[in-house]
Image 1 (cartoon, rainbow, N blue to C red):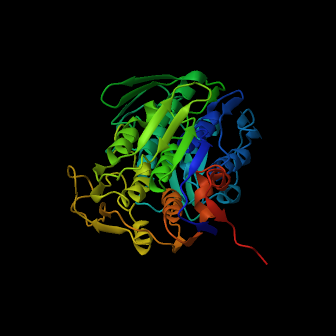
Image 2 (image 1 turned 60 degrees about the vertical axis):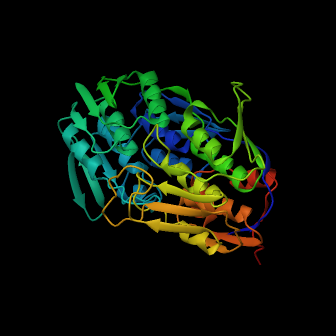
Image 3 (image 1 turned 90 degrees about the vertical axis):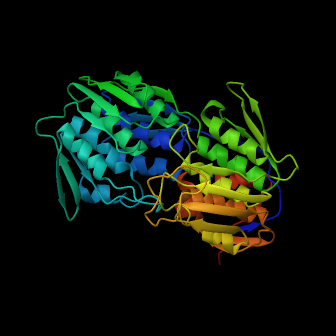
Length: 441
């Protein structure tokens, strides 16, 4: 639990390291190499600890020196069900280990998967793709067992939706499958492109065509890589939204304009101000509230290059302070507005609807999911006791508590926020936030 005394503008500087949504997948990619890999700008987050544990139980030697990760997969071995289950329920990464482990060992195991409860993220499409590659899938009470008695071969595969996880699965499996794989309707997020860059450094042949088509020519061997992870654009947007909601000013060192163009357009449309410093070493983006009333907007999330679904929650908190009616239409996950009930208890005026508001109809329309929100502002937020439901919503609750009058108590910070935000308490204190841990007796 974290105690937050609200009402103080955040002022100062924070640094973002490698993207959570890339680093964990880059660690999995190291399994494919016959020599060690080195990954730089690794954040100190719990997801990295989880994947480190999964790699180690499979025989990978993993060492962290500062923000540099060394991974030696030369002695990969099978892990027992009980060893893998130590990490079950805390990460969705195990499903992505399947392709690399099938190539290295001819078998893999998936425990029950965890992650944030933000909507259905079934593994069926992962298993379907692996079956088409040639994997044999068997389920029992302990989980899902996979084998590849005849090896894996290239496929032609089209995703119903440009899922990031499914695209990662195909990439990590296809790079060493015999023949050529063609993936249609693929995700093209910056983190996906960075993963492709890593695999190419290892020796993979991957061609990114127009219209979301990726072609992968399987190779017989991949070697280790040396790579610096791209900065975390989700964390950068979270600090930007915190500056706006608290009427402060935050310089986010490491934030890059190119990967945040859509967010920057929204930030400016709301009434926020920013300035880009392109210095390759010390650069970043400064975000601040210019002192004029914030403006309402109609937005909808989408796959890249659209508005990222993980940007939605912090933006909604900022929109509670805009002068008028705003709309947020969530098209990626069907259950991502659960956090708004806590914001309403703080005084936010937010109503949820099952209709597709403010944009074109999406796949959740007419299915009775509350996937559109109308935010009326400005709302005077007041302190409350808040229970964090998931990672991104949790940081949004912190923003709301810092923008509110009075003292809030936020529960679940260690379980969720530390999964994706490095040293967030230290960073908050550095920005002048008045926070503290309860005194234990």
